[in-house]
Image (cartoon, rainbow, N blue to C red; front, side, top):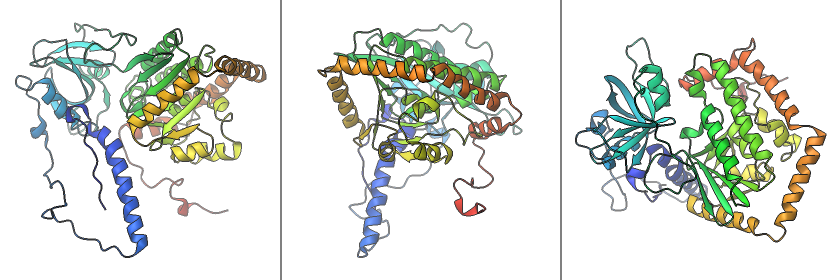
Length: 464
C-alpha cells in the first residue's frame, strides 16, 4: 500500500517536521490499508515498478554534504533555508564558523537585519543570526564536528551555548537583538515565544526545538504567561509548537554544563515555577492545546491547565522512569490523581510506554482529542476557547475553579507536593545512585541499549 500527502512549502518545512507530521500520518494510513487488504485475502501485491503510470516519484541517490553545502557569497536566504531545513534533525548542514567545523540546524528567516554574508551579526537568546547576500538567517542549533577520532560524538546545543562552550569569546561583540513576544509580528524573524490575542482569547506559543525546555526558556515562558494573564483576555491557550508541545527539562543543555546535577536542579525548579503560575491563575481559564507530541515533564506541565486538548495523532509519554528512574516533579503528584484513577495512573507512570491521544482521553488524562490535521485542530481550539470565554456562566465557572483550588490547598498545600517531589529529585540528582546521570548521558549521545529493556521485552521477565 502507499499514500500520497500534500507537500508544504519546502523552504518553510524542516525534514524532521515533515517526518513527524505528514509522513507519519500517511504511513499509518498505508499500514492500515495493507492490513485491510491482507485480512480480506483477495488482494494480490505487486512489485514496485517506476515504469507504471500510477507510480509517482522516482528513486534518488543519497544527498551528500557537498550537495547541500552553503556558499555564503552566492546563496540567498531562500536557498540557505532550503538546504538547512532539508537536513534538519540529522545530519545537519556542514559549515565553518570562525575556522571551526560545525553542523547547522533549526533555521529561520530574518527580513530586516543584514551585513557581510556569512558573518554573525546578532544573537537572540539561544540563536545566532548570520547575514546572507539579501537579508539574514537565524541558526537555532549547532553541533561541533569532533576535532579528532578519539572524540566520537558531540552534543547538539543551542547556538549561543555551543559557541560559548567550544569557541569562547566569539560572541562577545555580537549584539543581542531583543524581540517582544507581545508585539504583533511585523516581519520574518526568529521567535520561540510569542502571544497573539483574538477578542477575549490569548494564544501563547512556545516553539522550543525538540520540545526541550532549558532553565532560561522556562523562566521566559513563565514571564510571558504572567504577562498574558494581565491582558484583557478570559482564556489563555498554551499552544506549544507545531512539532512538540513540550518534552520537559533540557537534557542536552544539562549535560553540557560543568555540574549537570546543579543545572538539573535549576531546570526542574524553573519548570515547577512555570507550572505553579498556571495552576495558581485565578483570573482566567487556561487551555493546553497539544498540536504536537509531549513527553515526561511536558505531559504533566500540560495538566497544570484547566482543560487539555490534543490532536488525534499526538503521542504522549507520561512518565519519567526511563530516564534512570527519575521521580519527576511539575506537581504531577497533585495533578495526575485529579484526572486519572489510581488503578490506571500507576501503570501509566510505571510502565514507561507511550499512549495515543485517544487512549489518554479514554482514561481521563486529557479532556478530548480533536481532528487529525493541524489546521482543523487549531480552528476547533479557537472555537472552544471563544465559547468558553463567552459562556453565560463564565463568572460562575471561574469562581468554582477558584473555590476548588482553595479547598485543595487547605487539604494539602501545593508547596508540600513540590517539597515531596523535589526531595526525591534531589536523590536522583545528588544521591549515590547514578542511574539518572548515566541514562541522560546515553540519551544525549544516542548510545543504544545493550539489549531491549525489560519493560518492552516482557517475554524475558522472570515470572514469580
